[in-house]
Image 1 (cartoon, rainbow over the protein chains, first blue to last red):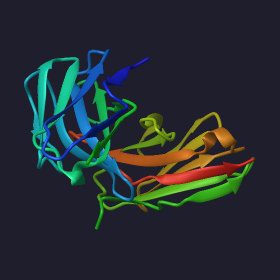
Image 2 (image 1 turned 120 degrees about the horizontal axis):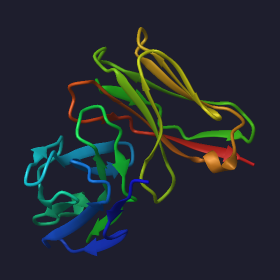
Image 3 (image 1 turned 45 degrees about the horizontal axis):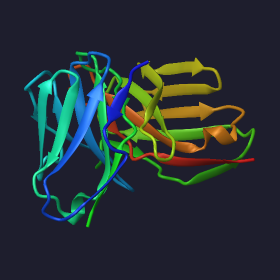
Image 4 (image 1 turned 180 degrees about the vertical axis):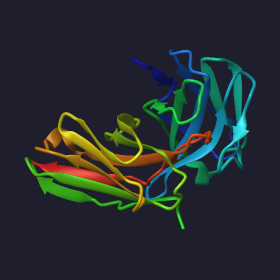
Amino acid sequence: DVKVTQSSRYLVKRTGEKVFLECVQDMDHENMFWYRQDPGLGLRLIYFSYDVKMKEKGDIPEGYSVSREKKERFSLILESASTNQTSMYLCASHYRGNNQPQHFGDGTRLSIL
Amino acid sequence: QKEVEQDPGPLSVPEGAIVSLNCTYSNSAFQYFMWYRQYSRKGPELLMYTYSSGNKEDGRFTAQVDKSSKYISLFIRDSQPSDSATYLCAITYSSASKIIFGSGTRLSIRP
């Protein structure tokens, strides 16, 4: 079974802090994704990565950056956290190739005070 | 217009009922269709994955795609309280690098 692990289930941070969300997958997947999920807005893609050190902007990249130093790990960084970044953050991965179904972690519920 | 539209619900039905969940999409280029189930405080898990029009069955679940109407459905037979979750439809096409998700329908099965 594919295992996508997000380092924290719940996180509380303060406005202006730099926040790191970590994601690790154990299936040697090339492609990894970061989403945020908000009520009524569904899943919105923040960034994705095809390979180590590769990254592509998704639909809402503003205020975020990512890092992919190792194939199994994809980090999401909130450079200076703001209250409108309070959300559920989901990491996903799949094998190389388009139209592959994605496998998700259980999410990090992030609150910015 | 959103690329995929999904009724957010909530939808509440009695145990044993047949449930129908639906999505419409706007781009006829979409070829691959998925349904995910998301329990509370968990990530989405893949339930069904189909390509092209027609039906695909897996146990109590049937995914149906009507490309001419740009309409996809998920049917759940003999619904159980354990089916209570949010169901997300998702679509993509062969040259796409990302999947488009519906906003999800919250389903509750009453014992």
